[in-house]
Structures are given as C-alpha cells and as structure tokens.
Image 1: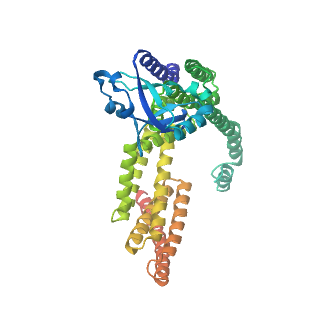
Image 2 (image 1 turned 45 degrees about the vertical axis):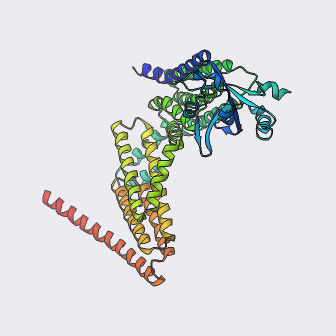
Image 3 (image 1 turned 135 degrees about the vertical axis):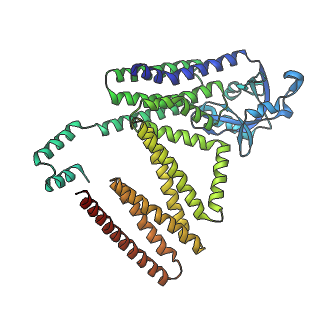
Length: 144
Length: 330
C-alpha cells in the first residue's frame, strides 16, 4: 500500500509534465501560422531565462491572414500578461544573444521590422513560434 | 534547558537514579539522528538544482528543444526512480534528498517547457502550477526543507497574481489607514490566531505526520509577531496619544496572555519570546512618552507594580485553591 503511494506520488508530477508537453506539441503541430508586428525590450524571467517583452502592433499587422479578415485583438489580449505599463507578451531567447537582440530591439527599431510567427487557432492560447527580423528568422540577422 | 542539565536536576531532586540518567544519556547519544548530514545533503541538492535551473534559463540555442525536453524527462524519471530505490532500501536521507531534488527539478522543467514552447506565462502562473503538481510530495516527505520551500513558492506565486496583490493592498490600506489602527491590530491578531489554531488542529488530527502544518504555523506566527512589532513601533511614533495607548495596551495584554499560555503548556521558549517582546514594548512606551516624562515614569512604575503584585496575588490565590481542593478530596 505504502509502496503504491510512494510510486504514485513520485510519478505524478512527471506524468503531468509529460501530458502538458504532449498537449503543447500537438497544438504546435496542428495550429496554422499567423505573423504579427511587434515592439518591446529584453528582461529576464526567474525560471525560463531571458526574453523579449513586446506588445503587438495591430496597426502594422496584416489582418487578411485571420478568419473574416479581422485581427483578433481581444482574444490575444486575453492571453497577455497585464503589467503596470500595459499588456505584454514574451519570446524567450538564448542568454548568449540576449544583449545583441536587446540593443537591436531598443535602439534600431526604426531601421528594422520585428515580427512574431504564432501558431494560432481561435479558442486556444496562441503559441509564439519564431521571431523574425526584416522577414527572416532572428538567428540569420544576428549572425550577419 | 539542555538534556544533561535537566537530568542533573531530576537526579538532585531524587526523581531518577544516577544510573537511569546515564542510561538515558547513552540512549540519546546512540539514537543520534544525523541532522547535520541530512541538512547539508538537502542544502547541496538545493544548490545543484538551482544551478540546473540557471543552466536551463541560459537557453542553449545549439541544442534542439526536443533534445532538451527528452533529457529533462529522463532526468526527472531517474530522480524519481532513485528516490524510490532509496526508500525501498531504507536510506531515508537519500530518499528525502531525491524528493527534494524532484520538487526543484519540476520547477526547472516548467521553465524549460515554457522556453521551448514559448508559453508566455508569468512567474505567478508557473509558480502556482509548480506548487500544485508537487503538492503530493508533501505527503511523503518528513523533513522540513520541502514544506518550507513549497510554502514560500506557493504564497509568493499567489501574491504575485495581480488581483490578489491588489486585494491585499486594499486590505492593508484599509486596516492601516483606517481611523482606528488598534482595530487593524486586533483584526490581524484574530485572523492569524485563527489560522494558527486551524493549522495546530490539522497537525494534531494528522498525528503530526506532515511537517507542512507545523512549518505553515511558524510562518503564520512570524507574520503575527512581525505585524505586532510593526504596530508597536508605529505606536511609538504616532502623534495621537490615544492610538498609541490603545496599541500598547492591546499588544501588552496579548503578549501577557501568550506568555501565560506558554507557561501552562510547558513551552519555555514561548514564555521567553513573549516576555522579550514585552521588554521591547516597555522601551517603546518610554520613547513614546505618553504625556510628559513624569506621567510616563509614574505610568511605567505603576504598571510594574501592578504586574508583579497581580501575578504574586494570583499565584497565592491559585495555591490556596489547590490546597483547599486537596483538603476536600482527603
């Protein structure tokens, strides 16, 4: 009896994490992609590391890619983090490139366009997939 | 009082024989719970897992996300398997170390999954999720480190939720800036007292099997006494004498009752701690000067006389009642 209790308790958090990973993997694989224009900067999360905190610029986003050719601003807002300075989204980036990306994002925003590709279906939380700088994955721009 | 001092006192008063004293001392020495070793192992696990969290947070771009996730799950399974193995072989220190490592690594895994899948969550969400899915581990851990870290994680995550933070802020504002700060002090003492009593009851009903209850009670006591100290200092600087008087009066009565309860329940540390707080209160009253130097001086002298006289009188009445009871039973 105690043996079963110990095994169940030890396996429980791992099972939950595996289920969560499976859910996220399925959603990432099945949901269609949409691209939105962004603006923001780079702070750090305690457990997931550096990220770019951004807001979505709906004025500059191509709304024809969404159902009914309408940008789902309200639905995206539901999944934003409400910080004191407004709604915010996060894109996690490697520590080694954080400084460079931060500099680019803060100081050279006028020279470049920043977009995020999302996996998105109405009714589900959108999942950020890729950060684009001038239409290319950020890794390509940073290496240049 | 240390065990040896206590045993010497008992031998001196012919309660036990010197041979019995030696037997008890030998037993306690051989029982030797490896507190230091166990504590250091858990501290080591804490440092290692924090290091792992930091490495994961660095977000190594050249390792594909699925590889990170795969190795993370393998590592979690190895820790869980190792903990079970340690439990089955009765290596309880290593079992506790494994359970604690599993708790910490679940947090690291949540960070990793959030990073790989860009889940866009706040610390409050991640922390609450971490706390909820590791809550069953509290049922199998007997050491205090896990409940302590779990409580800190859970409540810091809860207080990080903007709506909860706002509610606490409103309550604090209402309590503190209310027209009567003494009402706020009573409210805090009553609420924390009820919570501490419920936790004591839960601890008792569960046969003291789960250290989470006693650990939570200590945190509540910490909140209770730090609030009390805060209000006492506030009273020392408050311009309205009536507020200061009321706060000093309420805290004095409360500390006196708590010291008395500690005495009745044979808890010397509780008695000493509350009396120490009363010393601080006397000093703060002296600094505050309720009226002039003369009135404060007379007030403090009178309080001391009433305190000593009252206690002396009460002890005398109690001993007379006890003597009467003994006579009646004979």
